[in-house]
Length: 187
Image 1 (cartoon, helix red, strand yellow):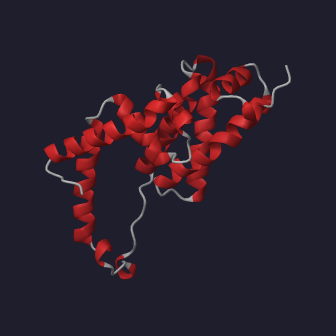
Image 2 (cartoon, rainbow, N blue to C red; image 1 turned 120 degrees about the vertical axis):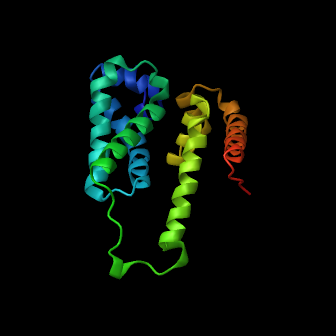
């Protein structure tokens, strides 16, 4: 069978990569590498650390490929793995803030603004953690991999392609509800 690898779905590419098909591996990397870079960039890592996150994620996939239970959800697996790698790296080497003499004078960069933003972010993550797993995966993919099509999102989260939009709306409504319960109202 002579099928162009760029027309295959993630699950089929995973199956071929398991069978040592290097073209399938190349297609997986071509297709998902930009997404991994965006995940690393979301953690404000420098270029070398972002490369480490991406490389570690691909190495983890190579190690887990034979045991990957849901190859049709590869995008979600890659995003989750890259996020964990970025968090691990970020905890090891926290992002340095600006030196006091070079601190940004804009109001949104003042310590009090950063403290309020930090408190708001903690509430947001607390509300996010209270969402069902499927909502966390869907909203996480939408935030960290906006280039994914609804069909790809559906495959990664285990939904039908036509259900992604309504599920997204329900998940955002639930997130707003959790935030309101924590005292944070959104416009």
